[in-house]
Amino acid sequence: MSARASALKEEGNKYFQNGDYKSAEVLYGRAIQQDSLNPKLFTNRAMTRLRLQAWDSCIDDCLRSIDLSPHNMKAYYYLAQAQLALHHPNEALSSALTAYDECLKSDVFNSSTRHISQLVLQAKKDKWEAQERERIRRRSDLLRELEDGLTAMKGFELQNLAVKYQGRMESMEAKEEAEDVEMGSRKKIEELRSVFALADPQNLQQRVRVSNHPTRDAPCDGVTGLTIPPHGTGSARSPH
Image (cartoon, rainbow, N blue to C red; front, side, top):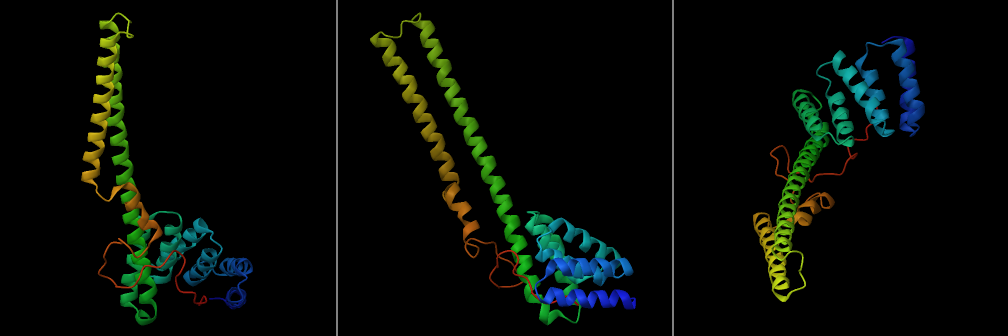
């Protein structure tokens, strides 16, 4: 790293440590202009952009750092966090697992593995919740489609009655038959809903509640037994 780039990086570190992330981002950017082939400068700016919640820019820096240094654990770690923030759990899980693998190979295993393990669990949890939301959506769509079909069938039967009685539905017999059609339709819909409820006894609302209770109903994982943290609780260490 050139002397100028190093000086800009160190100045950026000071701003970062003081919580002035915007100034730190600018200084890291200037350092990159002086040395655009240094992966550490990109990971420093990525970490700063993570604090600024500039997710897309953070991802760009992480990918550039990985291009320059394919085994850059921190780049994958920050990348996974930004991907989670953008609600891309599949990509985030892949990045987090890569960071975990790189951590196992490095000499910073003891100090970093806990944070990365938590991130892996968070990505797994978000992926599971996304799959669950899609399952619930499809189930709801199917139930609604079947109910609409039963309602349409009821309408067809009532039309046939109107034809049968030549539009004179005020007669007692016509009213009784129409009521039978209405009751039969309601019973079929109730039975349909009962079948769906038996197939999914926890019902839709109970299954969604996991989003508000991170430690409940979360999938098991063999990487670590740590409690899953909310987004953004990774290591707050200063840039290197």
